Length: 463
Ligand code: NAP
Image 1 (tube, rainbow, N blue to C red):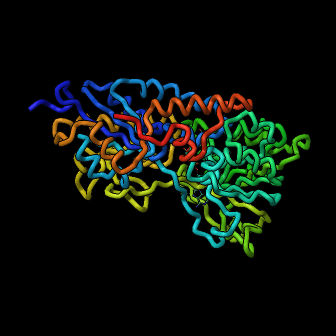
Image 2 (tube, rainbow, N blue to C red):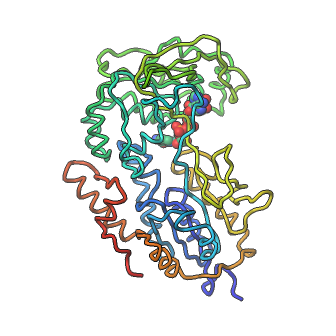
Image 3 (tube, rainbow, N blue to C red):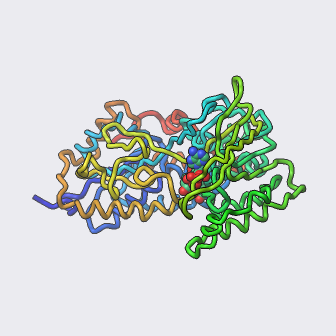
């Protein structure tokens, strides 16, 4: 019998998810010495995952990475099939039947909770929902965010928190030239938010945001970040972290933050306050958010592992809206081993683990493998590492029984799944760009699955 990965018996790989880790996994497979067939599947009818629905609309340059993904999608070995729910319409059993290997790159789309009283009050929202809403994710287009009060509190100091603060602080004119969805732009134009707090539980040396992002916050048209100089005073352990020669980022970040300690009255139309050493304790209000109580913290532990510890003092900020931006977590897929505590697929170096043993032929890459960390480019070495493990294992893999993607697509069509091909997506892409150009935006996104399918015509393409 022929070996898997040869022209006689190409390795059939299903990549689940078409975000950065999925595309980089597809690329690594195509660039390997094996003969491969790579079919990428996505729940949404559109590719690119967080690049489309996570990267901020005013960060168009970051989205240029799509050009790399377009080149990968153009490879004859690679196909894209969107609008297919994995674990439901396309079950794990079907994937095992039609593919020698399955690589889960489905990312993380839900948020971590704070676990504090009042978290479910009207006006308390997850960052992941707000980001998905303003970026036109079909699942979130009908969400409403109450921006009628004058104060917003964003909990967390990662780059997602910075994105949210920036989108809330920007003027309509600053947002108009982005690909923010029209309904979000309309809602933000009506926003009454005048004061925004970005709250971190640890200090300026430990903040998770990166240099470019925190600097950008100081370049907005009508607001400048403000920091109380008292908050920049460091304890000896933080000094040690800051002065460690390995710590390349913190000194640059500290320099930028110090610039924000001088209040600039010329930019006072929206106050953007950065607060350190504060943990959320409780969100209060009768039927909606009216204030947030914060525990004041000091740091304890060893440098680079410093933890926030309550001092016993608290502070209350009156506010009408709270965004928790404290990290993402994944969602389980039926039939795929999942670590509930970590919110990721159970794996060892990308090999999906079924108890103590790897599940043969099943792999994972990206956030759902390692957790929600790093920038888009981080996914490239991460996916490469997973594919290396797959290549090590390939001689032991059992070839799948069904070896024709057309047959799989016919089965899906019988289930009335209107899958979307890459050629379909290219039509959607061109239309979005055309609609955007008409109003001076890079694109106007279709923000519902129905509108995309209506545009494409509901009939599945003939196989
Ligand atoms: P993140 O960078 O991990 O930041 C999470 C923040 O939440 C940290 O400040 C963390 O504080 C805080 N936090 C966690 N649990 C908390 C709790 N219970 N109470 C209070 N605070 C809590 O996550 P993210 O902002 O969601 O970003 C995810 C990844 O996407 C990151 O790698 C980020 O760089 C990347 N990203 C990049 C860009 C960009 O490049 N422009 C844009 C968006 C996202 P501690 O540090 O104390 O844990």
